[in-house]
Every structure is written in structure tokens, then in C-alpha cells.
Length: 135
Image (cartoon, rainbow, N blue to C red; front, top):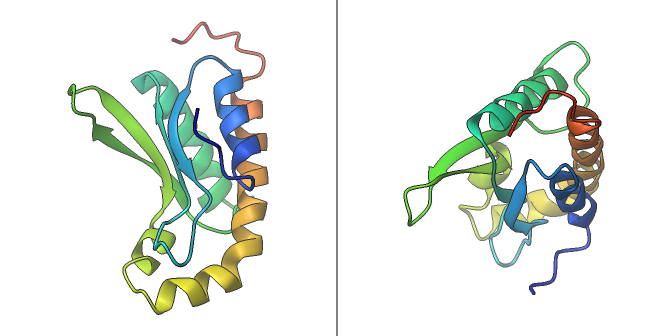
């Protein structure tokens, strides 16, 4: 089993706890590998819709709680199954520059860590308890 980066481990646990999401890969972000913070996971479209709706509330509304604008991107795997990537474009865009990303990452590291904690809380709120029967 691969080791989960420590800063993102609680978020990955929160996503998997519901049984409605199965994480596949994650990264807390690494400045010298040009790797942005993200979680790649499988879930039904109904579950992904609930997640995206909660993310919009937490990133764009008057009660904005997250530092970055996190969102889901749908991707098809090699078996043509729809899966999702939880990510923030501002970090993906920054990773395109070997000089820019390490600097941005160092300035944003605390914000990213805080967002991971809030995202874990969001997942626990959205899926606990699961009374909707969504699968």
C-alpha cells in the first residue's frame, strides 16, 4: 500500500469514511516535483454533484471558508469509467513553472493545510449520517 502524504491524510480518511467515495490517489503538493495538491477518487455522479454543490457553497458564497477555489473535474480512466479530481486551478496553473510553484507553495502552504482540514470537515458534514441512500 502506498503511503498517504501527512497533510492530506485526514481529508483522504474523511472521503473514504462514508463508503460512498473511494480515493485512488492523492498529493498534498510538492514544490520541487511540480505536483499540485489534489485527490483523485471514484464516486457516483449523484455523490459528485453533492460534493461539488458543497464546494461551491464553501468557496464562493458569502460564507466562503476555503482559501482556494476547490472544485471537481470529471475524468475517464483507462476502462472508460468516470472518476473525479478534487483540485484548485490556482495551484495547477502555478505548477507549470519550475520557478513559480516553489515560491507560491511556500507562501500558500498554511492555506493549503487549512483547506485540507476544512475539506475533511466538509466531507464529514456532507456524508454523516448518510440518510439519503445515495450510492
